[in-house]
Image (cartoon, rainbow, N blue to C red; front, side, top):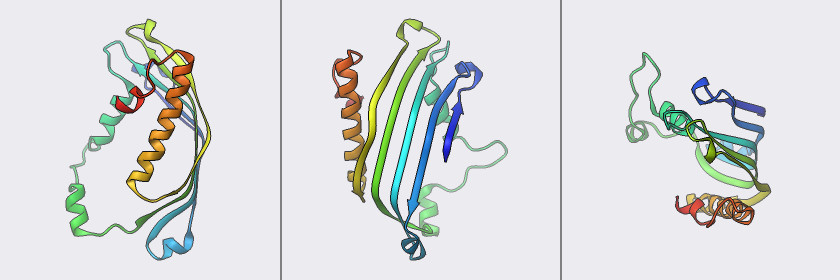
Length: 169
C-alpha cells in the first residue's frame, strides 16, 4: 500500500488523520502453502498521525475505535471470537516476522476545545528494525523500545517530562 491517507470527519476538522507513505508486506509462500503466515519483511512508514479533540472533548481516535467495535447498520453481530475459534480453526497460523522496519514521523494534537493544548512533534523514528518477532512478548518489547525512543525524543525537546509516561499511560 502506498500513499494511504485517512481523513478526519468534519466534526474533527476534516484534516488528515493518518498519512502512511508505505505499508509493505513480503510473505513466505512456502509457509503459506503449509498453513503458516510468516512474513519475511514488514515495512511500515507512518508520516503523520493527527489526533483531534472536538468541541465536545471527544477525540478522533476514540471515535474510530468505537466504530470498529460497532456492527455495520442492518447487520447483527456475529459470534464471539471464542465461539468462532471453537467452531473453525483459523485458515493460517501466524508464524512470525523475520524483519520489521518501522518509521514514525510526526504526531500532532489539535484541540478544537482548547487550542492552547495544540502541539506537533517529530518522533524521530527512522527505520527501526527488529528481527525474528515470533511471540506477543517479542512484539511488546519492540513496541516498548519504539515508545522509549520516541519518548526520549519528546523528553529532549521539552515536550514530555518523563519518557516512561508513554509506556505507563
